Length: 373
Image (cartoon, rainbow, N blue to C red; front, side):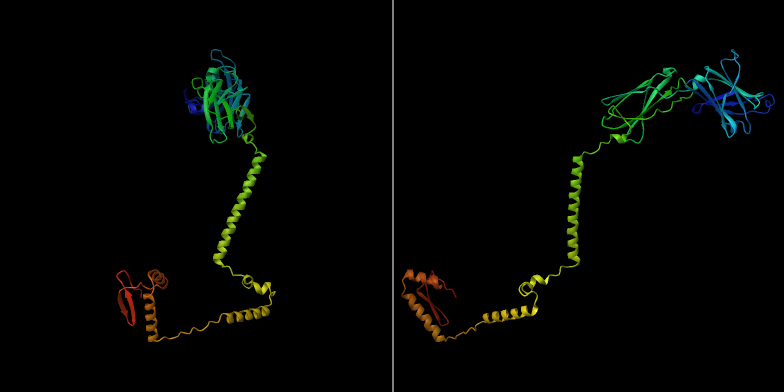
């Protein structure tokens, strides 16, 4: 008889089996079996009925102890069915060594048998009496020691905050685990389980996860939604006032933008009421009365603004020469002070020893004087 154990599924491959005396020379089958020992209290043996025993119903017999003890075989008390065929069996664990035997439907012909160590396939129960301690940023979780040896178990902790998407894990020897780095202001979910170590189990079976609990700074919560504190009335009032002010500000900006756009698309037409205020204020919109009064006012204004004709008198050349000579003679008879005053007022040059002629005009000049034409 050859045996190969597949660790990931706790499956035993049994080959070259002599099923019975009738099939001994022609039947060689490969059987896949899964064994689970629930907390050392109940065994579960399952097999693939459709693949291993197609269209056949088999019965299972078992006994605990060695072959030397020669204990009596017991038939499976509780079968697991798959489409009407036996595919598994549940029975009480009674010892570390287990012998199983598959027989035909009547239980007369043995198909094959096998012996295994039930302690190598223990699956622990979930942790019991879990205690939770939170101090500062450190969390400590403990549980009761199970019936199975604690040296073969380790405690696994998983946790995540309400901001995390994935669980974070931490393992420690049974039955206490510690972790630090927690934010007291955050809400965390915690769950734990027990796991068999590889040196005690062929398959490192782990228990089911405990029910997740929610904590924040040492306080147990129903959910992380309870961690959200409601806003106070003052904060709500402040937010409301700010929201109203923001809406008013945005409306003002919108109105200004609309007015600018309207002016650019449709220019403003002046209201004649302001241009013709006399028509509406003094004459109550009576256009005939207003136009008559306006015509009278315009007539008076035209009469008052008549320009007088400017008459230009022509002077002869003899008169100009005579007037110039008189002025020169007057200048010669004036003293220095009177002369400077007169020159300043009349813009004429001071008297001089030399005479300068320009056409019919004659001017007396010295070396410190100049002529303004």
